[in-house]
Every structure is written in C-alpha cells, then in structure tokens.
Amino acid sequence: MLDLLEKYVACEMPFERFVELSLPLKVRYYSISGSPLVQPKQVSMTVGVVHEAAWNRKDEYRGVTSNYLAEMQGGDTIAMFIRTPEPGFQVVCVRRRKKDGFGCRGNPAKILSRGSRR
Image (cartoon, one colour):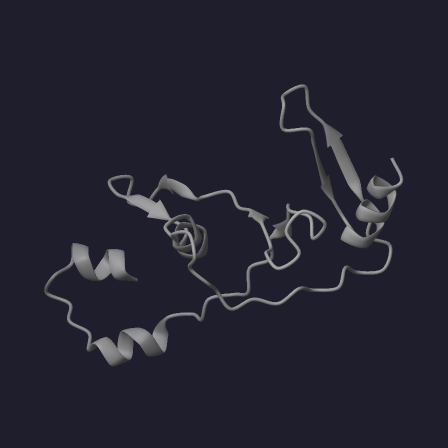
C-alpha cells in the first residue's frame, strides 16, 4: 500500500487510516542456538536477516523483525518467550568441518543431556 501511495502522490491518506488498514505483525519463531550450560542466563538465536528486492524492483525489502534484531547492540534486551515444541518434534544435528562444531535443532533438554554424557 505504501508503494502505491508513494507512486501516486495525488492519492492522500491520513496516517491513522493507513495504520488501520495495515496488517499487524505476526509472531516470529527462531531457533535457540546457544546452550544454558555455557551461558545459563543468556539465550542465543540464529536469525537469517531478510534483504530482498522490493516488488517495485527499485527498492529493497527489509524484514522488520530480522533487521531489528540485526541492529541490536551488546546489552540490548528484547521481550520474548520460549515455546514448547510440538509433540513428535525431532532433534536434527548437522556436523560441520569448520571449527564451529555442530548445530542442532530440537528439544534443548535432550541435546544437552546427550551432550553432557560425552
């Protein structure tokens, strides 16, 4: 809608009306990529920052949430919650050849209990 208003400047819309017509942001879910064994009071997340060509092919589309998170500085805080995985959710681990070890996606309690036995 904003693209149209910018393209056709003769069209006017009060800001309040623009906000009424805009869809609310949806909740975004991200995977935890840190371990409470390493940092018990801090959560680390892996987020893919969204930068794509806009529909008008002139501008850039930037994901609201991913860019907000990418621009945060050390010590910044966010409001969040941890969602319990759906029943049947599987843990997926991928070994990498680099120094960064391996990455897992799934139930952190199962990953940590399995990792602490090694």
